[in-house]
Length: 81
Image (cartoon, rainbow, N blue to C red; front, side, top):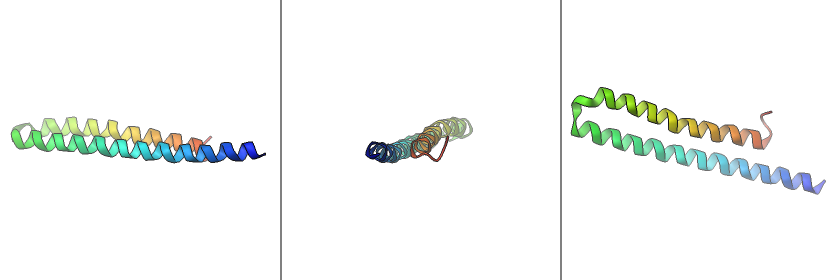
């Protein structure tokens, strides 16, 4: 019985670590993408439409990593099948 409690506790710890690293990574990714967008638009304002399109694709990919981390955390904590 104690082994199941230990496994459950470790799964909860793993869920916290997964969502923590996932959200920090997505935050850094979106921050770096935003910095690059601002630098590109400040150097060449005429490419703002194209640059914003590429930025949105990059931000969506970075946010997808955070969503994957959230799904993994939910599975580890037992809230999802």
